[in-house]
Length: 357
Image 1 (cartoon, rainbow, N blue to C red):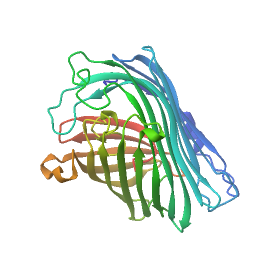
Image 2: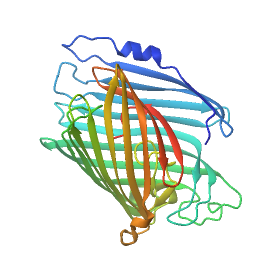
Image 3: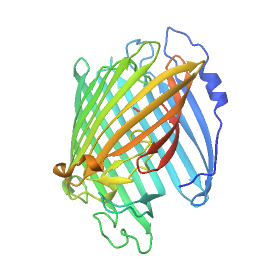
C-alpha cells in the first residue's frame, strides 16, 4: 500500500512528557498521536494512537512499569483498524500478563508460499483478535504460564484469477484459529522500554485443535531470544535469534512470515511465508544529541516447508537505519522512524513507539 500523505501531531505530547515528576511516586503518563493518511486503496483515513505507562503500585520502586498501547483508524472505504496491546506487571514482578485485543476490517497483500514465484494479489477480511500470555515467576527472572491465540477470519473479497480464489491453500475460505499452550520466559532486562543489558528469552508451544474451537488442527512452537550488550552512555548492541516452527494443517494466514515492523524490516509482513522460519537480527543504538538518537540494523531470515529443507541459498537479508526521539526521558520511551532495504529490493518506512525488540 502506497501512502501519499501522513500527518502525525507529536510536539505537544512530547513537551508534556519531558516534564520532571515527583521521584517519590511513579506517576502515569500518556502520549497521544493523531493520525491522518491517504492512499488509493483506503482514500482518506484518520484515527489516533496512544501509549499509556503506569504502575499498579506506584510506590514500589522495584516494580516494572506496565503499559497499554492503543490504536485505531477509520477510512472512507469503511475499513477499520483497532487494537489494544498491553504488558502488565504485578506483585513485585511476580506476575506478568501480556497480549492484544483487536478488531480489523481491512485488506492485505499475498505473494505466495515458500519458494514459488512471487505474484501479488490483494484480499479483504474482517476478524477479531485475542492474544494472551500469563506467567508467574518461579525463580529470579524465570517465569512459566499459559498462552492463548484466537483469530476469526472472514475473507470478504479475493482477486479474480488469483491463487487464493482458486483455493490453492488451506484457509482460503477463512476460518477460526484457537490455540492453547504453555510458555516459558527468562527476563533479566535492566529496563523495559530501553534495555541496555540482560536477556529476554521466550519459548512457547500451542496446540490448535477443534476441541478448543479451532477450524484447523496444527502445532506451533515459537522461540525468541534477545540479549542486550551495554557499551556505556546508553549505547547498546541488541541481538535477537528467533524461530517459528509449525506442523499440521496450517491456514495460509497463520504461516510463519518474514517482515513487519519488528523483524526483517523492509519486507511487508508475509512477503515470504511457510511453515518453518529461522532468523536473526542485530541493532546498534546510540544517543546523538538532546532527545535524538540513531540506530543501524541488519538481519537474515529463511522460511521453508520443513526443517530439513531450510537452505542458506533461500536466506533473505534486510538492513537499514533509523532515528529515535525520546518522548519520555525518565522512562526512556522513544518514538522510532526506521527505513530498511532488502535483498529482494523491497523497502519500508516504519513509524511507531518503542524499540523494535
